[in-house]
Image 1: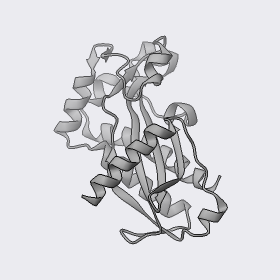
Image 2 (image 1 turned 120 degrees about the horizontal axis):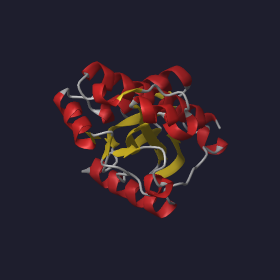
Image 3 (image 1 turned 180 degrees about the vertical axis):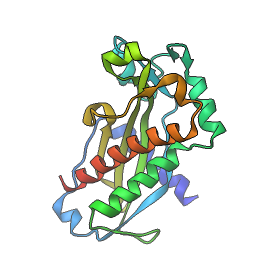
Image 4 (image 1 turned 60 degrees about the horizontal axis):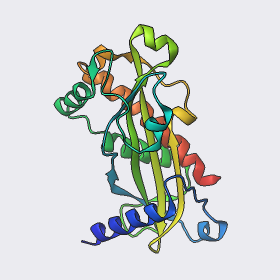
Length: 209
C-alpha cells in the first residue's frame, strides 16, 4: 500500500513539474545522502515506438509512447512484441539491471535494498525501433530507440531528475536487420541491453552534474 501511494504521489509530481523538467542535486542535499535504493518498480511507456526517416518529428517525440508507425518494411510492432513475449524478454528488468550495474561502477553512493537515505525511480518514457539512418532505409536495418527518466526521492520530495535518450545522446547504436530481430532471442536481448547500458551510464553520470 505504501509503494502504491508513493507511486501515485510521484506520478502527480511528474505531471505538475512537466515532462521535460530536469532537477540537479543540490550540494546541501547531496551532503545528506550516503546511500540510495533503486525501486523494483520500473514504469514503462504505454505504447511501442516505430519510425523511419521522413516521419513527423512532432508526432514521434511530442507524446510519450505514441506509435509513429505501425510497421517498417512490412515488419509490424506486433511482431516484435510477440517475439519479446515468446522469449521472455522484459525491457523493464533489462533497464533496471543495467542501471544498477552502471550505478555500482560509476557512483560512490552506497546501494541498499531498503532503509536508504534516498530512492531512485526509473521510467521508460519511450522504446521501440527506428530505421538506422539513410543507409538503413535501403538495407532494412533498424536500431533500438530508448528514453529513460530517472528521479531521486528523499523525504517524499524529488531532489534530482534527469532523462536520456538514445537518439539525443548516443549516435553509434547498433543496427540490425529488421526481419531477423524478432526471430532471434539473443539479438533482441543484445540490442536492448546495449541501449539500456548506454542510457544508464549517461544517467548515472548526470548525478554529478
